Image (cartoon, rainbow, N blue to C red; front, side, top):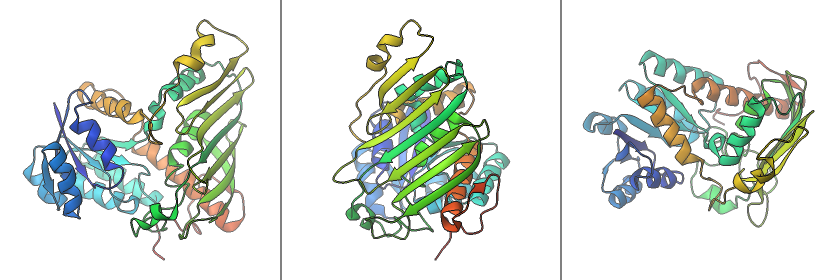
Length: 353
């Protein structure tokens, strides 16, 4: 049995605490929660009959913990992961891993130094239709890849940003690309391969925040394929779409729905047994944009720790996403195509104003 603790009891903590607290993940147990606003910690602690703390160091010293899950604001991820690493316990951290490339590298170093595993929470990779898409890609069914597209058309009204002072700031959060579309940026690069260059435009269409709420990105991949990222939280009145489409010389797949949960297109020149039932069998209907991938992700974490399986979304994978997102911001700020690898100069992400 692995004992889990949560650091940060904000919006996303509800999903994590319910999975662990309701015993939906075999081989896990929620033992404690921590938040600098003690009332938030107490609320979850009372629900699941676990210990509540206001200080993470006190919690780590007092409790028997195997894995600590960092759910604090994005701009604090690096500080908290590096501090927690000294206790020698495995760490899961919500997306984005951090807000600067340097911070991701420091996090990787700290965890390696303390001989612990670092897991970046990218649960959409574990969505049922996304797993099926990846299987087709690994099997070579697409042939030469030609284009990949992700779309995030979600609604985040001003009340969402106003609930916490750090939301929508460059120093602590980033905009739609760093926050809501982070999963989709990761999936696109995971499917299509390494990125050669990006060109981006962004704007703040509706939200009263520092950062962008709407962005368009074109990408060129090193394999010659092209890509598009379309991301906005300015959809009204409600969430519309979270999708990925992959096109190749021998086939095309579209996974749509609100949370990349619905297999919408599955066509290949070399039709195989079972293809006709894929649309029906590999679609799910989650209650919100978080989807069902968190459970499969936790099961993956347990498998990695208990059985030594390979960590599919480690610190290096998290770093790749932040490097790509930073390059996108660099392009939007300069109006120029940005080639990877690079060092940010004009990107404001992770910088205090």
